[in-house]
Image (cartoon, rainbow, N blue to C red; front, side, top):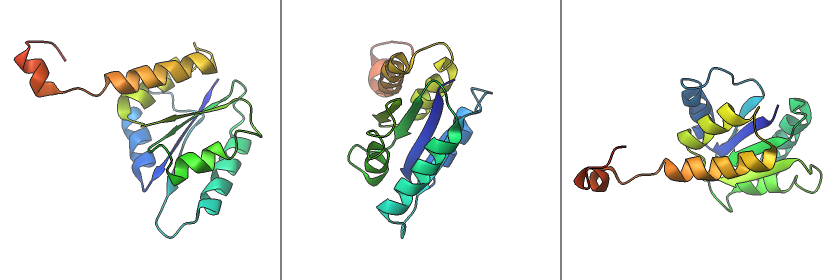
Length: 137
């Protein structure tokens, strides 16, 4: 099974994982890692390193982070040379995380990366515009 790491600024990662568990019951091998004020980038990188090493995900790990270029993204990216089966997608949201959890047993890691990007993007809608065009959400 592919492991899922959600790494964000503040408590967002915990709340995203908690919310996604309302839609997907199996959150085994899914961890939330927070980056709090006062914490250094080295501390976060060490926490991510421990999580990756302890996870035991045999089919790879997909890290979902909040901001491209942010400290969480950089902390995970620092591990890529050591972990060939580690992928990162930025812009984490509930649709992205829920679908990553749903499809991680039936897709390869590279397929799951594509699905995460697609579902995250498709989960962002201009509702007022859709209603004006009489489209369904």
